[in-house]
Image: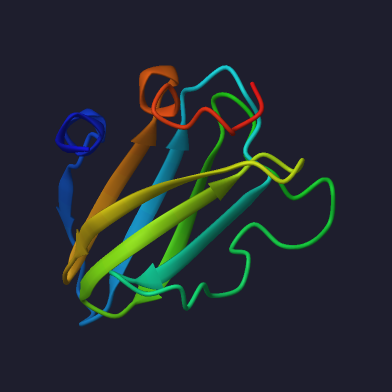
Length: 115
């Protein structure tokens, strides 16, 4: 699990507001259909940050910013649109921007994610 978290590239940029942002970047050779956040260690998944329509997805090379994220630890769940998912745990969000870059190596740990 530590290798997965180490593979996530996290960079920081100053934001003026108290809430943070997560900039999701897809560098994996798959399209991400669903993106949800939950307080770390819970199963309280929030709404799909990519929306519900088929065209609301994160193709290879695309990025999506989730704004106004309260500072804290979060679990991130990515879905493939076919019932498969991949969960990344304990991602820290503060009063800064966090870049969460998904690459193919990260998805290796998620055998049920359709690739």
